[in-house]
Length: 126
Image 1 (cartoon, rainbow, N blue to C red):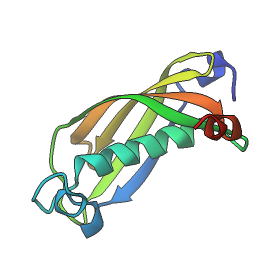
Image 2 (image 1 turned 90 degrees about the vertical axis):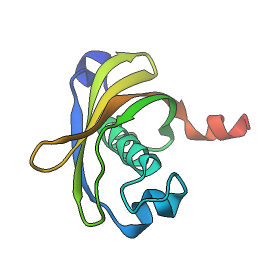
Image 3 (image 1 turned 180 degrees about the vertical axis):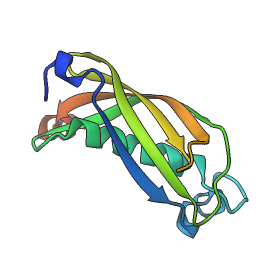
């Protein structure tokens, strides 16, 4: 993992396209055919992992999430998710995340905290 000073401000962006499988109706978080909040969260977490770029045996686990889902996205819509390191201390890394339409409209924003772990040691404790 990079040093703390190298991590601060580091970011990654990824585009996703909403499919039927991503809807609230499909994932059980509602009844409408719009992007489900659990899927939006999973996309945000995936982009935080992109930022870290860890290689085996290191990985990271999510420990805290605060996410506001501010606007709906229909099937076929493109959602641009960005994660930026806002804080790093030892193995703990906190990200600011946002999801937008390609034109810039804010769809969601929040904060995700991840902790870097050794995958084998982590799984060995279960």
